[in-house]
Length: 324
Image (tube, rainbow, N blue to C red):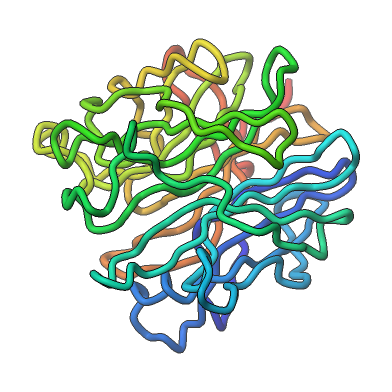
């Protein structure tokens, strides 16, 4: 369990450098008292581990910029990849307040590092919502301009890089506009925004903190959504929401968003898969979200992810069946 006594910890992402696992996480001081206030005080912390269980906290990765800037309110969720030239790229969400409405506007920037420890921000943002495809704050259908949580992956055929984005379509029912936004780059520095990889009307107002992964040979897309951000039809099933897993044909889809499996209910949130370098198994971590109506804010120990027929199952490592 990764827990900070002085701060709440929530969204996170993982990187394996070949020797250590790196945990990048959002955190904010518990002195705020109100957990909802954490979003506007978020910084990106950093810890390292050799086993995904015991973590050593190291120097923070990112903090907000001085205003005016696209990230002058907070630095939010992202992902890390390595360029062929050896540089690490950390893509992250920048949050700022709209000067007219006071609502949150999100866009995407990046920072680079040679050692995963010291990060230099590039001028940003490099990507923002485009009304040709994506909902803007001015549309008035949502509480903020949702364009965040960049997940970057290499093109499967070697043609540059792709970035998946938590975004909303510019049409459809207000609570059913969640889509997988999409951008492409030849070099990780210059980006072209493209139309989303999915359409609205799949049962989710937003698809938070996306991740593509392969679990036991099956391609999946992980996303997160709570019941309050879903249309009435899905809420009527009694779901609390939480961590969802959709089957996928390939890393860039198509994805079965409408048929996604609820992997964890709202006690947990923001699930991430990572391959264990020593065992080859796929592990799963998430943060503890709700305990009887109380926000917890700590990250679980890893669990084993495996398939039971068409359902993905999580098993605490201490409960796995002994080897024959």
